[in-house]
Length: 354
Ligand SMILES: *[C@@H]1O[C@H](CO)[C@@H](O)[C@H](O)[C@H]1NC(C)=O
Ligand SMILES: *[C@@H]1O[C@H](CO)[C@@H](O)[C@H](O)[C@H]1NC(C)=O
Ligand SMILES: *[C@@H]1O[C@H](CO)[C@@H](O)[C@H](O)[C@H]1NC(C)=O
Figure 1: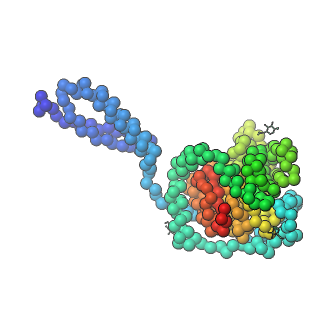
Figure 2: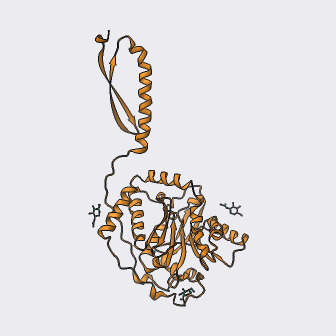
Figure 3: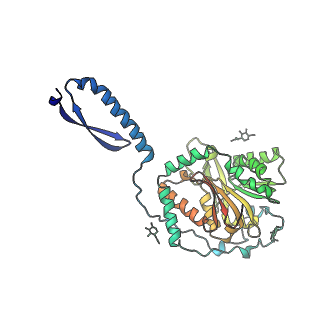
């Protein structure tokens, strides 16, 4: 009986997430048991395939195909560092009481434009590779971040030891983070920018409600490389200055944007060191950090916390390149404090002990 069994090659083709897998399965056919075995064997094979497909989907990837990053240069000139700025920015009250009239403008030099060294280039492309499957990195980061969402606040408990902590928040939104940061840090001076008028209104109501007039100041504008006015659609907290597709029936508001450098000159960053710059501005983080890292202003910021926004880029590769360049530029003066790549991260100035 056994000797009469033959061998049959069964080919199963499965399409798993558009990728084709061919499984060769050599089954020994026993004429009598074949019918009895066929169903359980098929079930077993399907089960195994089910699990391997899950594994394949989760843990293996298309191999990384290196791509070169071609990004526009960051454009800034010494003429951009000036006291000649729009009235709205001139009206910003400096964060520190002892700022000189000239805002220490002679201290704010451009950093010499330096190409990445071989080591920086290596580290930059290592970042590009690490983040090439950006969706998965985001997923991993969010899973880890969900275990301790409070880190974006609690991390700065270290400021309790400082005499008069100073914080600038870009993208103040409704004033959700501000009271938490104030409490965790004991900040004495807090400035928030929120360009969307309706969000700004809620932010100022929060200041009133908590009676924080003497420590917290909010301004109703945003920051970018150049000054502009925009009409934007309001999508609650994902309202973006870069992604200004306005839906038909969506509410729109006009927002004002001023130059990154003007704001930081006026606030007095040329004369003093800021404890924390926290940025959650739906895309403007790139302009803000690129401008700051192009001047000596970056040396006057102890901690920079930001949320990078991939969603405002139409192309993941451009986003990845720009995100990794941002990190590499920050790495010249700062080092990682904590990081959930592509979700939230904090950089700490290299000279700081804590
Ligand atoms: C930087 O690294 C990339 C990828 O490893 C490489 O292709 C490129 O030639 C390097 N560029 C420089 C200027 O070293
Ligand atoms: C802003 O504040 C108003 C009044 O306190 C409130 O009704 C509204 O829901 C708030 N807006 C958002 C988006 O939470
Ligand atoms: C302002 O005061 C701070 C702290 O007291 C000091 O470090 C800084 O140099 C002063 N700046 C100016 C422009 O006097």
